[in-house]
Structures are given as structure tokens and as C-alpha cells.
Image 1 (cartoon, rainbow over the protein chains, first blue to last red):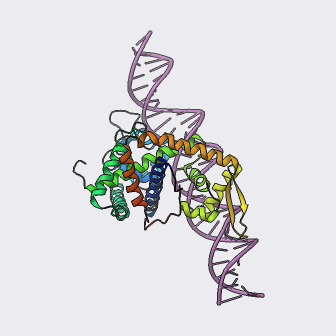
Image 2 (image 1 turned 90 degrees about the vertical axis):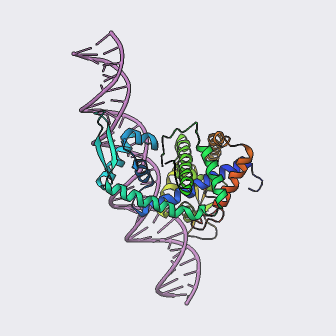
Image 3 (image 1 turned 120 degrees about the vertical axis):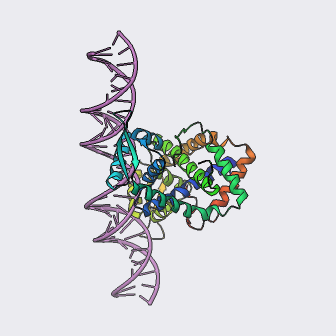
Length: 150
Length: 150
DNA sequence: CGGAGATGGTGTGGATTACCAACCAATCCA
DNA sequence: TGGATTGGTTGGTAATCCACACCATCTCCG
């Protein structure tokens, strides 16, 4: 515990931070009756339309899972299916106005929820952290999770 | 996008890192036919026994959810229920030898999977990151997630 | 062309995860 | 002792997720 490999210590801190943030996001999402995955879908669609398969790829989910996820969100009026003009097979998914509204407030909530924690760091260290995380995400060789998976 | 509030940029990086790490962990867990939650349970039990309610509290889950989770893991021979010597109501959960073995290899996998990414940072910056994350986790006011929720 | 194969989505079935509410059993305390 | 609290389990329901089978639409090559 006290005499720990520094790599392990960093690993532990990273994983712990991950769980911490995930917990915050999950609780926040639940506030709006959303799952974390649904929030991610909304986040992706915030500023673009996307096809079902692309969404599934971004999130690392099966197509059929995406289909169901979209079904439920569509039933709630948060997003809509639209025919892709270039490919008759493809289905574009877009946010409805209600979806946009919910997405906006949800993201403000995230900001409000995490800012106090981030403010535990003085400004210069925030910049430092941003820089370090940027490097980690940089051109992460394994993931290629697609653009802005938030 | 390019002209983004610095706070938002950090928020984005933090959330993205979270999803990235979660993705890695989830895929790794799936390798061993485990869910991320199950891995977390194993991680908690790595070096101690714990009662059902405590586990649920650590993970932010309902007692009944924990009960089912334990059921399935027990059926797989990964852990066992044991009577708590001090409280007749309580049920202690402990890893079986098989559970310990699986936990060990799973954690080596995590190490192997994340180390290359961490090595994108030179040593001193790793120390810096550890320090920054430590501050964030520090005495995080909102969560109080319990000891070593990994 | 035209048909074989690839690609995009949907639907079904089953396991897991998760919640809530209801319920026993053991403990606490007044 | 007896009521309230705490610890776990059970049952019911919904969401999530995968694997598999299936249909529709491309794509490409012969």
C-alpha cells in the first residue's frame, strides 16, 4: 500500500478518477431519467447527425443495442430517425428540439457538478492537467474512438 | 470548438479520458467474461472481506443489485459468502482461490493495457499527473466513495 | 446488365444489471 | 421486553447488452 510501484499508483489514481467521474455522470444522468449511454448518444448528436452504425462504433456497442437505445429515446421524443440522402440503407439519427434542450441542461449540470472538484486545483495546475490529459488522449493508439465521443 | 472556455476544455478532456479508460476496462473485463461492475467487486475484495451492504455502498448500488451480483459470481466459484462473526445478520463476502487468481490476472491485464498509454508521458510528467489526480480525489467532498473503490 | 457478396438496420431471445417494494432475521435501545 | 433499525434476500419490472437471424439496399465484378 505505502510501498507501491509508482506506475501502479498512477494506474490506481487514473482508474479511481474514472470511477469517480463515471459515478457523478451516472447520478446526473439519472436525474433526467437517462442512462450514461443515452447521455453519450445525446452528446454525440449535439452538433451533428450520425448513422446508427457510427453511433454504435463510437460507443463500442452492437448495432442491435444501438437500435433499441434509439427506439427508446425516440419514443421519448429526444431524437428522430431520418433517411440518409446518400444511402438508402442508412438511417441518420438527429436530436429533436426537446433533445437539444435536454442535452443543453444536462451538460450544464455536468459542468456544475464537476467544477467544484476541478477548482480544487489552482488555475495553472488545471492547465497542466489539461495538457497531460491531452497527451494521453492525443493520438491514443488503441482506441480511435471517433471524434468527440463525449 | 477552437475558442473554448478553458474550464470546458478541461471538463471535456476529463470526461473523455473517463470514457476511454472505461472502454478499456470494459473490454478487458469482457475478455474474462466479467462486467465492469464485477471487476470492481473483485478489486474491492482483493485484500479484504466486505459485507454486502458495504460493497453496495462502495459501488453506489442497491443492496438487491449486490445480492444478485454476488449470486452469479458465487455460482461461478469466484467468491463465497461467509457468516460475519460479529453480526448475525451480516454476510461477509470473500474471494475464493479461483477468484484471487482471476483478479490477479485481470489486474495484470489492466496494467498491460494502460501502461503503453501512460508511457506517452515522460516519467516526471507521470509523477505530476499522479499528484494532480491525487488532489482531485483527495478528500472529494461530494462522493465519499469509500476506501479504494477500485 | 445481373447476380453474389458486403453493408446497414431491425427483430427476437436470453443473460445481466439495476431499481423498488415487500419481506424475514438479527440487533439495538428505551 | 418490545418497537424500531439494520442487513439480506426475493420477486417484479425495465433497461442494457450481445448473438443470431433476417430483410433491404448498395457494390462490384464477370
